[in-house]
Length: 132
Image (cartoon, rainbow, N blue to C red; front, side, top):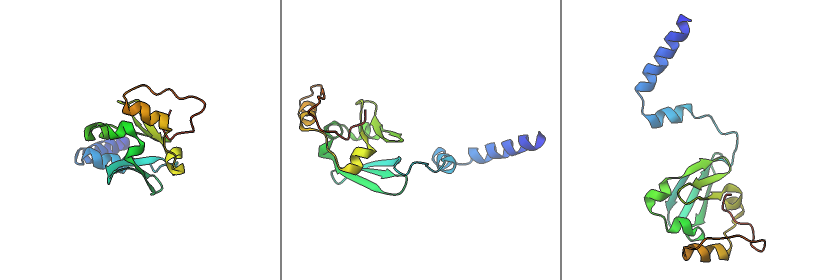
């Protein structure tokens, strides 16, 4: 029991001397899912999603009107999920499956989002890359 306490104490001392970012990088387990997103960036007019296996997918920002209209601060508030990336503020996201397939949202979605109208998918719309 004393050995466990000592080890725990040493770990706590070590943890307090590193930044939160370093701690998270040190303790993050490797993904069991090669297509799990690990990073999202915006530059060169595209959204770039880096996957756990090292691939980076870039799609035109214009394909994602909710992100085009977002401020840089709003874009940073992203949640990385096993199968996609999600922006809670917009209640919208991008699926990795759709990004890998190069699918862009249906034209009806573009039209509705640019007009600030709700988008209601129907059975005539093609699959899109937006997470559900």
